[in-house]
Image (cartoon, rainbow, N blue to C red; front, side, top):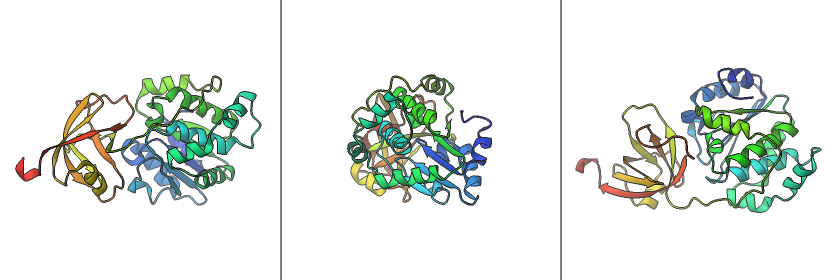
Length: 283
């Protein structure tokens, strides 16, 4: 089941929803509106899981599970383990789960057993369960194996699997890989150290700023109001840096436009920040 024009029908009847791999309020505004409505229902649990604590989700979600950028393959594998460990599975599925290094995946993704057990409790007690997968999984370098693990969950657990994405071709490729056979071992999880940016789509209001925390500013050795260049991958863009006191950690939010970057790529980027001048007064 995909999250498309009728996704509201899927969500409005749910009593347990997990949103994984999208910064909901900005990346998926229609989904955000649906979750707002759902959150007002009694006995409904919404889990928001992402490397960025989205302030807009704090009054909507029952649980926020933060994980390290790049570790989405590990997160979906851990979710499969905790949801399916007591289910009757095929030999291949049992072998895949048995070979997972749970301690390693939890340590490297910066998650814990209690968080996954809480999610499993929400789901096991619910009648209508929905797992919503976003672009951070669909565009991940390990998207094919992530899709296979999603299929493993979908085939062996009573839930609806949905996607939230505007990338039609990429979603189609992900859907085409939704087969449980051919599961691969979860690769070593990548590290995103230093100054990391998250490329999010936005309405072109002319505000081409990089928003980050004071901690990000210290790590990048920049200040509020500085004009900077950001180099990531093969791209370099210029931005004004603005401190957002709602943000924590060393991941900054970079609103992207079609003229800036290719959108069909994983949204987290290791970046190099260079100061162009000290502040807006010297522009």
